[in-house]
Length: 114
Image 1: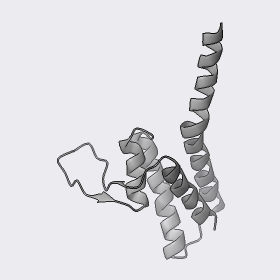
Image 2: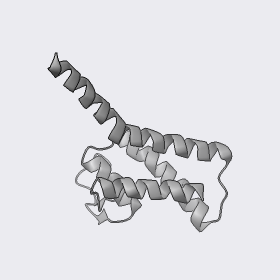
Image 3: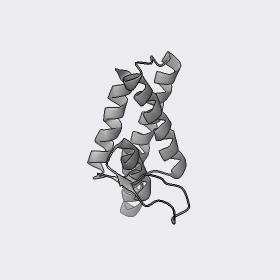
Image 4: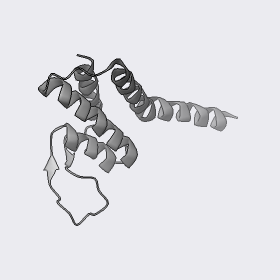
């Protein structure tokens, strides 16, 4: 259930960021397959495509996606350590997308008031 909830959070982040799809692949070879997907893989890549995630952060979210997929489709039980990592990853994504920009604006506003 934890992996499904974490997946739902990532889907929610994509919805909040207005990401409905993305490229199937985010490799550096732009001449390769230009196919797009509306599934979670495409949406994570879509976050990268609009510079909301770095390439390495997108790849990390894909690892989370693989873990969740295995848990749901293969009924494979993740370890407690794996679940703790998933939660940390999601916390960091939320921090990077929402908390850090807000804190940066607060600092900027303080500087401009002086």
